Amino acid sequence: MKKHFSILLIAGLICALGCKQSSQNVDEALVEQKDVLVEKFRPNFHFTPKANWMNDPNGLVYYKGYYHLFYQYYPDSTVWGPMHWGHAKSKDLLHWEHRPVALYPDSLGYIFSGSAVIDKNNTAGFGKDAMVAIFTYHDPVKEKEGKINYQTQGIAYSNDEGETWTKYEHNPVIKNPGIKDFRDPKVFWNEEKSKWQLVLVAKDHVQIYESPNIKDWSKISEFRFNDNPPLGVWECPDLFKLPVEGSNEQKWVLIISHGGESAPNGGSGTRYFVGDYDGTTFTTNQKESQWIDYGTDNYAGVTFNNTPDNKRIFIGWMSNWNYATVTPTEKWRSAMTLPRELSVYKQNNQYFLKSKPIDGFDAMTQSVAKNEISGDFPHKISFENLQHSEISFDAEIKDSLQIVFSNNEGEKYILAYNKANGLFTTDRTHSGQVDFSENYLKTAFQTMNIGTKDALSIKIVLDASSAEIFLNNGEFVMTNQIFPNENYTHFEILPNTDLKIENFNLKEIENAIE
Image (cartoon, rainbow, N blue to C red; front, side, top):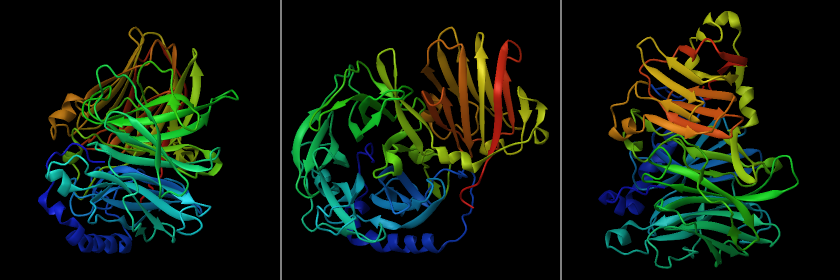
């Protein structure tokens, strides 16, 4: 959801009339294109648009063997513009098939963020198993006129598995109550109440609605949290139930994103609350914010509806509004994070969220034989395809730990842990291209307080322009964009003494876009 450009392009005001044809031309080119030209920094196994601008994941839903990813998309430029919903689908969440643009702006506004469900009981009357999208209309004309009610909620439906869409003739289905920031509906079916429910954000809090038919909605409660200082506008909510690991207990999780400078290391970020939900009201005993990712490049993430085995699978936008429009890519801009499975665990009478790569990701990896790796295994090694790899190991730590990825140009991406102060850090100051944005440089050094640990289980996933770090099976996570001018081929763990390394594994990762 674009939130931070205060002046909208005049061209966007007439998008409902003029941009559909150009978007259709892009659609045809994308669907017909068989091969993807792999540009510099184009990921091998993270989702990217074939061309132009992408941000938030939207409408995440599973249906008939396919995971559907809709996303904020501007088909006419590599910077943000009048929002559409792009569309891709996948059988495994890793190999994606690009589909035509799903939703276009119209007279009610741009198509901002939202969600999608499968109406198994035909409650809306659009047809059994209709795919129904619920999204925010953003009216640029009203915004330009200074009105505050320029965001409303609309719906559309598809009877051909998301290929074509019909907008509901009586949109909007939720009108604006007089709130400037009123958006991002996430819908789910409440089995206990046999009703549809949704969470949406209203400036600095969450509102919860319910409906028997996806068309007629009634507000039933609100959730607020006393942030001091305030974290700014709330965005992209999600509400779902998960079992607590190792128990018969179940808890509800509420996810919220924030732009601006709210995240722990600056810029955009996503936090969560673990609590209880009685079908009307969400409550939590949590005293402070917990963050789903402490890196600077995981924002606006939400989870899939209707997944097999009720797994809760999360995907985030792998960027940051502080520099998203100026990252050094050419034909496309922005990627999604690896899909991650979420779980809840309890520690010291508190509840926390874990996130780790989905199980299916292992099928894309293959361990590299030692005879293909040069150097002092495992402390200082070189490998040609390190830039598209997964490195995992367990470390017993006496005082500190440092991990260095580097290339022949002397560029370095550094991870470190200091046992004395409990801080895990990442440093991309000299990782490659960094001068495209002052805000990127300002957040080059990032910290995460994980406390005193005698041992760490570490997994690092590198792609062409990203690093995703999972500590202790996903208890702590950091996601960073990096832009090395030459692929990293060297890896080093320091110190070489007083550090016990076990279960070291270097895996090469399949190219999912070939």
